[in-house]
Image 1 (cartoon, rainbow, N blue to C red):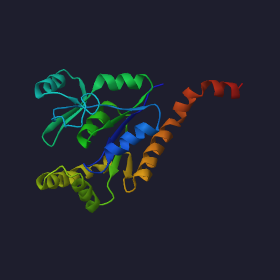
Image 2 (image 1 turned 90 degrees about the vertical axis):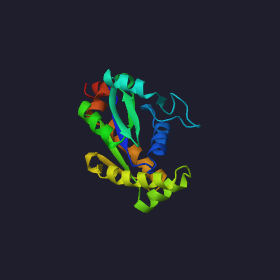
Image 3 (image 1 turned 180 degrees about the vertical axis):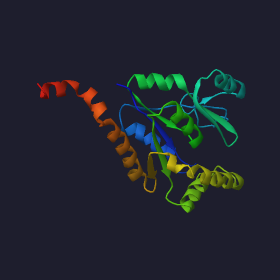
Image 4 (image 1 turned 60 degrees about the vertical axis):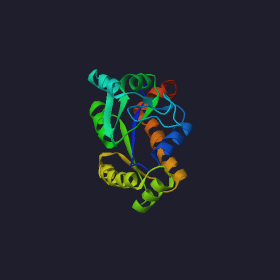
Length: 203
């Protein structure tokens, strides 16, 4: 049984990473793909757990070798999803989440048409800015840039199959879980999973 590939996108500050981590911790049989990036490693980050941190030369070599399923430049840093581990997990029947922006989502949909895409929205522009400021790690210029980029990111929402508003965290998580569980109840999936039961019932 082949796993499902999920694309989850959102503007910075919408709470996407927290939701994805909670989803992985809530639903069995689903894993988060770890991206490669040229972004500098932060003090609280672990290589191979949060990202695979690589230099520009390594990233370019992987790009030239066709090793990325998708890649994009965001805020001056490059991010990419390695193709091999994603395809391996899907073949093993594991659902895989790609936490990527709209540029990467477009590339993935071109490569894997059956991928399921979800866009996470903040409840309001005011709340998005409040969340960005509450981090306490970005200067005003960076916050202003992130707000401008958020408008661009959100403008692509209609390209996604599902929209989830992260107004209350628990509610937004429930909606993400519902998407995954509904996908697992599709007839073509259940027929494979319940083959023995169906055979018994139809005898």
